[in-house]
View 1 (tube, one colour):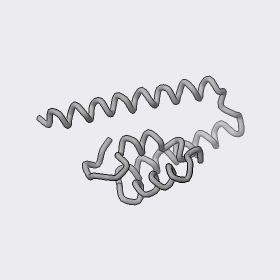
View 2 (cartoon, rainbow, N blue to C red):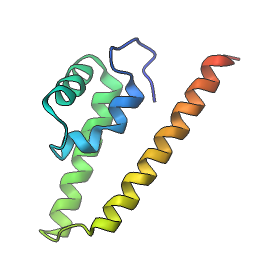
View 3 (spheres, rainbow, N blue to C red):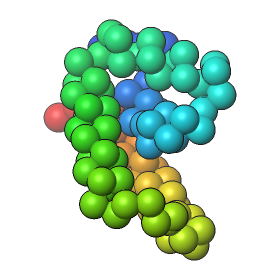
View 4 (cartoon, rainbow, N blue to C red):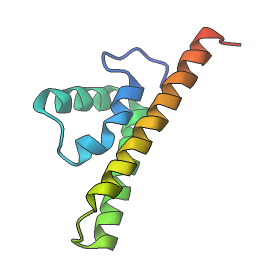
Length: 98
């Protein structure tokens, strides 16, 4: 996803780090980059809001049960794969805007 505007941190990079940001796992610099981007990019802010709601709903539904480490690793790998697919698609669209 890209809003079409130029940002210091690209939309795809911010969206790839949304869960890490929501989980408080980004360093201070990374948090600042994500916050700055969300402040200036409506589409990413909406996506962030949706992910925040989903996280809260899952947390409420699952209680305090910790996520198994292997499941977390599989989910993160899949997210990285999807981000790679998005970047490839965006690059192809940029190369052939037809």
